[in-house]
Amino acid sequence: MTKNSMIFTIMASVLAAPLFAQEGVLDDAKVVSLPDWRYDDLYSNGVSARNLFDRDVYGRTGDEIGDVEDILIGPDGQVKSIVAEVGGFWDIGDTHVSIPIDQVDTSDGRITVPVTEDSVGDYGFWNNEPVQTGAVESEIVEGVDDRAIPRAWRASELIGDYARLRDGNAYGDYGYVSDLILRDNKVAAVVVQPRAGYGPGYRAYPYYGYPYGWNAGSPYYDMPYTEDDIRDAEPFDYDRFE
Image 1 (tube, rainbow, N blue to C red):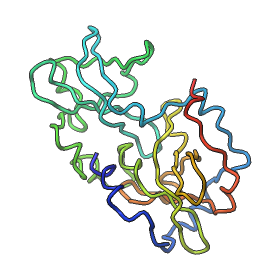
Image 2 (image 1 turned 30 degrees about the horizontal axis):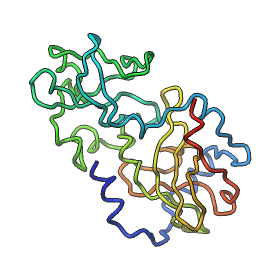
Image 3 (image 1 turned 90 degrees about the horizontal axis):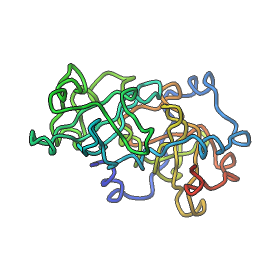
Image 4 (image 1 turned 180 degrees about the vertical axis):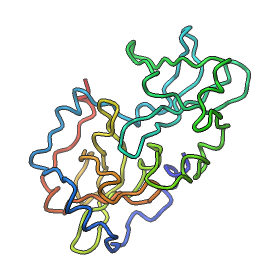
């Protein structure tokens, strides 16, 4: 994705930025106390969004018909659909489709969907129109990224963004978002790779979306925590996924 590649070409150090109109939002919204935050449910029931990217997608006949390109998530953090590139198997040209999550079967350890050559047109993003290859890979997807917020957003819009911590009346650079953990078809946690000064490995934190002032498309993911809050955060161990 374009944004993910751009992260390596931007300066690693981000100047602290003033708080936007979030103070009242954060006061009213529930912030999880990190001493009470546990990874156990993430390890046992979580799914890595990043690990879903590029996974093969199969039709109900067992044929491989494409691969996962992205995940479409609603304003409430609920997974709405997977975005897949299909078409090569049917010689109709590579096409992006949005498959509702309740039609996606992962019970056999692989991703199976009901899309067929005849039904491709039923799985468009909006208005039953498939999106041609190239549109999803651009910065703006018509009908998705240009909708008035709060809006549906792609997992790749948040993965690769700068993660920042509260620092008085500003936000300071902490690292960048490397993954989203999904549980029960909802975003449960944001995985951050902190910059070197915070130690090696990854950290997983509760997801804070629109009610907390975050906007899809922003290059920053601002967390309601300070350096003192995250000081004792334990590394997130991908090897413990069950």
